[in-house]
Amino acid sequence: MRTQVGIIGAGPAGLLLSHLLHLRGISSVVLERRSRAYVERRVRAGVLEQGTVDTLVEAGVGARLLREGLPHQGIELRYDGQSHRIAFEKLVPGRSITVYGQQEVVKDLIAARLEAGGDVRFEIEDVAAHSLEAEPYLTFGGERLDCDVIAGCDGFHGVSRPSIPPGVLQVFERDYPFAWLGVLARVAPSSEELIYARTERGFALHSMRSPTVSRFYLQVPPDASADEWPDERIWAELKARLETVPGFTLETGEIFEKGVTPMRAFVAEPMQYGRLYLAGDAAHIVPPTGAKGLNLAVADVRVLTEALDRFFSTGAADLLDSYSESCLKRVWRAQHFSWWMTTLLHTFDSDDAYGRRLQLSYLDYVTSSEAAATTLAENYVGLQ
Ligand code: APR
Ligand code: PHB
Image (cartoon, rainbow, N blue to C red; front, side):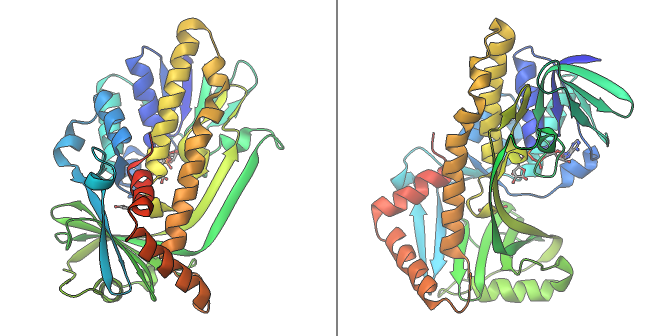
């Protein structure tokens, strides 16, 4: 078997790459370890930057996103008994975000790939990448797939990054001393906009998926398990962290999904070795506070598509050679923004009174200075 681009992983990065390459007449095969049902049900974040929406629409996979996605012109910051709106329409005119679950993006991409006759294979368990320096190939289940290029789109725990020889990559990481408990509930959102709440009990986030489904997150200890959080405890804690301003009541409903997400940051440099190119979570992860993970994956794939198109149409490898460098500027900006949002809003050490004063001082600054609010807004909607 032979293809131009062998893609490991059918998350948003691998599926979008395969689809964008198809639109440029470049062949690919996607090999995914999990089942189609599993990847379509995997609940993740749901905030799409304008650039991400534009990419999906231009690729012809944005019809349902445009119909069902919820455009947002601002977010709310809640702390110390006050609520403040960060108004995108005023601070970054013409730029906004759309709330649309990542697994909906995955479903739309899988449908588009299969409709176009794309080769996406699920439940392929033993993918390995070989001969990365020249004439690379993938093996799986006794089969061999020769490729011109391999794209490692297999997430943080995938096989592509570990297949790079030791000593090549420089790794940067940070673990946070807490995790997020995320839930989906069948209840209309209690707020039109996302609420990021800093409280002495820890951080809480009110997000949404549709007019009838709400999404919530609670800061929890790093080793917390969803079993320790029966529904009543979740609602009581969400109320304690969100009902902190006069006139706001949190509506409750049936919780139908619960999961704990570790809070971690990671970057591997460079994002390439020989003919292997890493994209999305395979190369970098951010804590979810700024909702940048999916958007970074889409941005990597846009850069990689341009580079591969040039390589296959002219033979010039210059854009491929500078792929990592082109991506890492955006990656590090998002790393900093995610670290900053995380640091501003979470409880770190409950004995650290000095640190709490710093958080409150910065929150006062960001909600009273247009310059500071613009910094938040332009990073949140995504720098070009
Ligand atoms: N072989 C084949 N597939 C694999 C392997 C493997 N050895 N290891 C992992 N995979 C698959 C996973 O099952 C998953 O479907 O690779 C895919 C990686 O997808 P994601 O983890 O969704 O990563 P990515 O496509 O880079 O998307 C980034 O996902 O984690 C979130 O916050 C992140 O929103 C961001 C987005
Ligand atoms: C989500 O809706 O899942 C979500 C929203 C905002 C974030 C993170 C996750 O910062």
